[in-house]
Image (cartoon, rainbow, N blue to C red; front, side, top):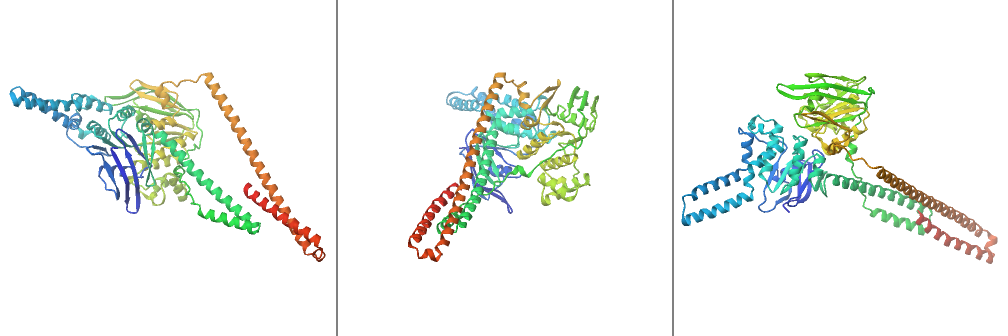
Length: 632
């Protein structure tokens, strides 16, 4: 075990963020921390690295182990070049190299004991240099920089002129090169393109150390981690396996908890009905049985109803008008900025109902294509034609469609004045903006919150051609899943740019890859794109699958039929017993009336017969009531 978190608790005011959270990270283990936005993932990382103090609990790092941390917004400002900045990560290796060179110079003029001492130091230094792979540190720097999307032409750029995203990539590169025993990464792939993300996956998977990652990229987590720590309502749960394994186990756990709750509720209701019926028999033994059942019922520990977060955010995207079959036709599209040619001669078409993803490296021009379609940018050459009755709804990753000076409520009200205040609040509530949240200024919102406001406006637009630019940026996993479900059920047409491979896999039916060679189409999702062409199932495999399905279907039908027959028999048996009880009670009542007859009271033989019959009925009733209780 290299890292241990023990009963970590943290609250800000009255809001409890973490409550007795515990988990361990083993040496070389790759671990993800997941949960909805605001649940406390970053807070936990900051407590681990000592930036925040926990209210309770402790963090233990194994002896002589080092810790490296990449925050979401790393501070890196320097007048050095990118390459020189990276050399800092290898300062200890460079210092060792310089020591070796000095010893080599010294030994040229030394003799005897002095030479022996220097030779000993030299051997120790070169052994250590080999251990830290010192001979390859320059190629390591180049490899990491290129892996994270920098070109050799970028190496001489000053750090001070880089964008925020480039600085984050540089900070990540420095951290990876420093090779700490435990790496903590908070959203490391937000500014990486698909190739860089794939490279980082390989690097971390093979990393000789432990990695703890906070990320919302499920495809990335699937390929890197072997343990998932979930934070949910201030508590942690640990699941072994990658993200898909966690998701499956989480769903199974949720279903099990829900079934347990529903079963208990059914059992409680059933027991209450049995108790009421037993009391209605108005017999001493049946009343005692009822009281016994009541005591047992009082001892039951009532289960809480499981909270299903996905029910909180329901997006409905319904096109008001059906477009023509030809939604968009693009021919010969070209665009350059100065000497930088993004693309030339692009041709593609979008048909009604298609869900198309554009993928490609950062800077290849994906967002520019969307802006040209929306009239925000002008093409240098080429044409585009919208089909009949096509109405575009645009989701801008920079959220330029939002007015920073307005509140969330005003943003919706001003664009849709026909909506009532109640309707606006209901719409915003479906995007997790409740109570006073709706009066937050747009300028004060996080990226994820701005994304949800933009999606809310998109929902209300009733567009039939939705264009999305990085719609999953800053969204947590739950919000992504709900957006995926909404887009998959959408009856209009969708064109989007995304680097979220899991999202593409779930929603895209066609992929357009933008590269220096132009656009290349793949009819399928992201996995199909990676494989180039999905392997077709043979007719025999299809036939076998069909046979198995038919067999399973028949088996399910026969099982269901037997269960229904058994249930009907039980209901019939119960009804018969109830009728027998009613008949015997009626007969007993009639016999008791006979006993009140003066003529019978003086007839010993008749009195004995009636009394015996009543006792026999009581015996039968006792047996029947037990049988009824068992059937019920």
